[in-house]
Amino acid sequence: MGVRLVRRPLSVARAYAELEGSGLGAVTVFVGRVRPDPSPQGRVEALDYEADLEPALRRLRAIEARAHEHFGAGRTVLWHRIGRVPAGEVAVIAGAAAGHRAEAFRAARYLIEELKRTVPIWKTERSRPGRPPRPRPGRRGARSSG
Amino acid sequence: MGSSESVVIPMNGNAYHGGMPGSVRVRLFASAREAIGRPEVEWAVPAGGIVAEELVRALGRRFPALARVLPTCRFVRNGRYLNQLSQTVRPGDEFSVHPPYGGG
Image (cartoon, rainbow over the protein chains, first blue to last red):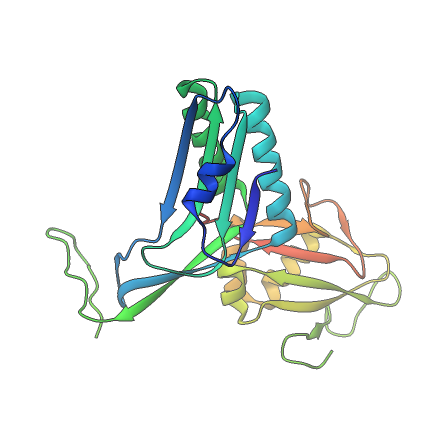
């Protein structure tokens, strides 16, 4: 099975390699990276991910099984990194290989949407102090930090 | 018992119902953990256990900041989701509080 919750960096190349298989002519790989967005404290420099491991792994396996049974995926990967993930690095990979693109797209989308909705994983922003974010024009009550 | 991470909290002062108490390990994640300032507490319960709904209410009474988070939470007993809060949580069980998820 292709589910992982790991503290080490995720490799897109390895995920892609896991999706190879005879007759699997279409491969869709979604990669989620940490964005260095402005934050009230400055700028996001990392996200700290935590998970409740036992139910999280059980949910990931159930999602993967359904991607195969109901969405026509031949092979899948559903990997999430936990612990501190610096901005720019990969936090999640959801990939599906199928015979044709429609199934591959549908299965990959199902994997990532279900992960976000139903898997007990949480993130906390870690920010680098800096210039306060510029208030957006027309937005009342925009905050600025010290 | 006695460390900052493990505090046995009686349900209602010194009053126990249903026999000698044991405790449930309550694990808190993300905003639920931040609400009480620690990742878990040992919660004293009667020997016969406590209905999950009552445990949730008692946690909210003890930790007002947590009470604001609880309505959005899901609950897990010994690694399995509780579909109904009418189920019983017994001494020795692990009871996890899950705020809305934020993976990806």
